[in-house]
Amino acid sequence: MVKLLYFAILREKIGKQEEDLDFLGSVGELRQRLIELYPQLRDVLKVCLFAVNHEYVGEDFILKGGESVAVIPPVSGG
Image (cartoon, one colour):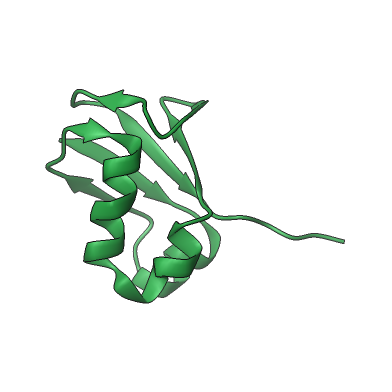
């Protein structure tokens, strides 16, 4: 089980800021699982960054359970 934290457009589109997901595997596999769960966010999820326990990680980082995973969409500013 991992705790997912959603920000910005992700939070707005799915209507929740966090959820627990029964998942073990790589961050890349998690990205694919989220695309399956929320196909309407496919384009955004493809470019999101992931942080595990407050540290950015790559696609090959393995989630073993108990982690807090922030799903961070690209942001623009000005």
